[in-house]
Length: 126
Image 1 (cartoon, rainbow, N blue to C red):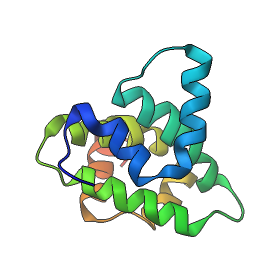
Image 2: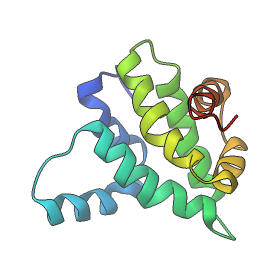
Image 3: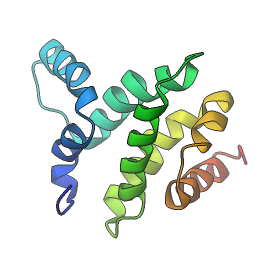
Image 4: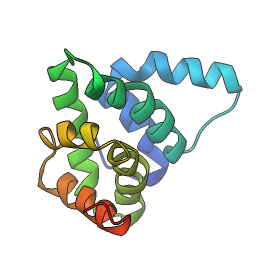
């Protein structure tokens, strides 16, 4: 992953997690339009990959570690818009399900966990 910018978040995700490309292409084909980072990270990454993996009885541990390592890079970025994609779009959705959140915490790094705690406190869930 090279220099991150808000505008390059979708490309960075597709490069870092190629396993998500099929889900992304299906969504793009269905809607016929390009998506901003919040839609891609929320609907494609979180709903299409992360939550199903976290709810699986036999999740792909390697892929979950890869995803959360990537999210950790974003969570530690200096750009608040990038951190908000992780906090509000990914972690808030994961936190909607306490079991998923508990399982996700096993994979979170320090920066990701801090953002997760922030959004959980905001919603009064922590």
